[in-house]
Image 1 (tube, rainbow, N blue to C red):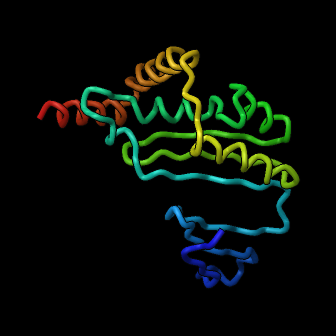
Image 2: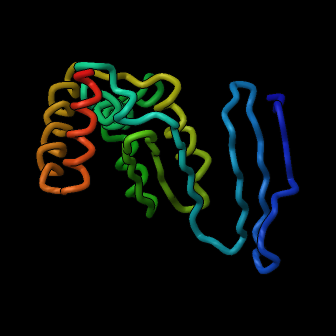
Length: 168
């Protein structure tokens, strides 16, 4: 693969012994690679600059719903809980979050299985399944999280703001 841009001169603290590299892929995906030979786990995060404020009018929760659905199988790895089991089996953890203007996906795992985990993870963004069998369940899960978070004053204020903006 030909990289569009590579930069090894990342400004860092003199006490930071890690190696850094910035690369820009042909699809314009920007990556910051960090090497730390003293760690026992590797990690990856994908950050998307879109969140709940990007939901189409009348389709509140779509970004959060997509966040949930992406973890539930791909063409290459169609078994719904394959990723979760793989990460747990290899001492890792995974999570994702949708904010107002971002969504991120994260995992960490033992170093020796990182390449395989990264392949599984990357498939979510290449060929997700979005199966009919998971759709209703995940719509209910997103709605349940939304209702639970209404008791959080900051989240309630944001929802009121979104509703007012949508009405204009």
